[in-house]
Image 1 (cartoon, rainbow, N blue to C red):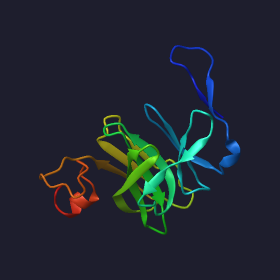
Image 2: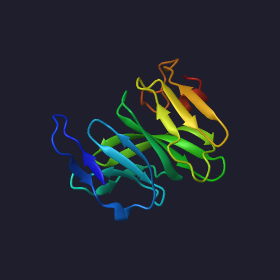
Image 3: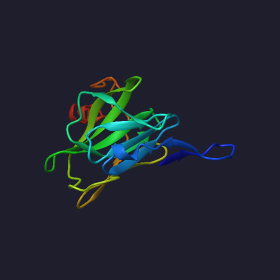
Image 4: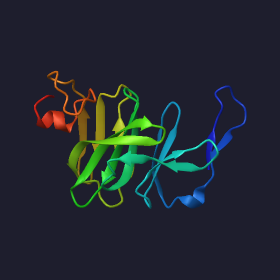
Length: 169
């Protein structure tokens, strides 16, 4: 059961009640206007709706792995999602809203190993400059850096993996 507590006080309003839909909720991200949840039994990312249900996001390209963690990046209003793939092929992707519940997916980190029962393995500093990733045997901290050149491999104004590989960041 998810409640929304009014800022001015008063009784909490029920936002989500459809618990029968979920298997094992693993993480939640809260933005200024939405709540997103992950369910271990499903490979989708869900947005809670105002009527108490949930809506699966349409993500292009499709996610390759099971979402195990989600964080909101308030610096650019995107979502970071950790995906548990096969073996040490776990990744982190950035989801950018394109229209309504449609999002584009960009891989920002690869070669991670979250483990079969991983949950809540991501955390992002308030200013969005440090991403902390917990794995089976280590904790990694990534610092956001600016682009070193005017070239941006995927035109998203962020120093992503492709920019590091191409020497732009």
